[in-house]
Length: 304
Image (cartoon, rainbow, N blue to C red; front, side, top):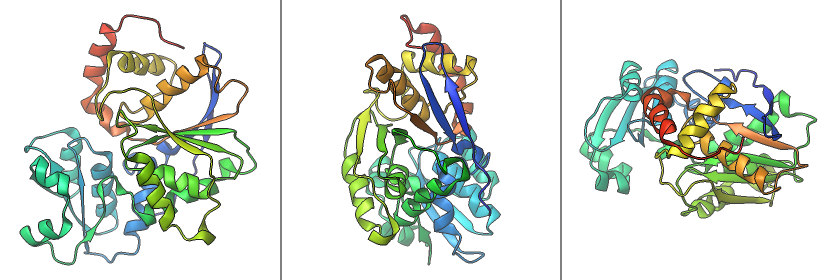
């Protein structure tokens, strides 16, 4: 599967903030955004009919993209889903793409023991991809984002990207020009162990395959746990939509919110900034009604 051309949009908001938006969401409508760069390096060397297995929640972009990619590459797929059996647009799609869904309790999910689950469900000779898809192949795939034509000959001071499992940020760090500062905005509501995750992934990259910018950090936009949308975030999302910016509510929305708050503190004024749109718009189907309701409950000014 050939990587499509990706573009950069120049964004200028009414509050005066301007930045460039790297449209990874343009890669594919279903293998969306960073998932293209994380998953395909893991799948391309498998043989037709091979079995691939992974983990995710009921709205997981990773599970959704994996199911579709596996179908297109002639692979069989299994998704271990956290929690009680349920139906969501994401899981309905995954099943329609041929993925076998197995729901497991949260304690079992927390362990994510591929050996235990392979034995229990007789998944012989399966290729296991970690939750979120972050491993060395994913890091190397995300490092290749810098090879996109739209990024050639352009110099940025800062790059902002959402961080969940750490693979995308690690890849961007591994392939980054030395002069750029990379800021990962946590989707977890805290820094948790994200710095350790990213550092561990970077240690696996052979030295001859990375330029490895040393200027990187993990920041927190909203101290709200993963998957939760506050009234302020919801209002930010709706306002962004009116300006033509369609963002996923779990990852890129927090980055956009953080950028606007940083603009108020002068951190990004006079800097050339690149924000990465990591896709995941399929998740909006289950969230849009709730976002609209929460946005109506927000009281207070927005920074843009």
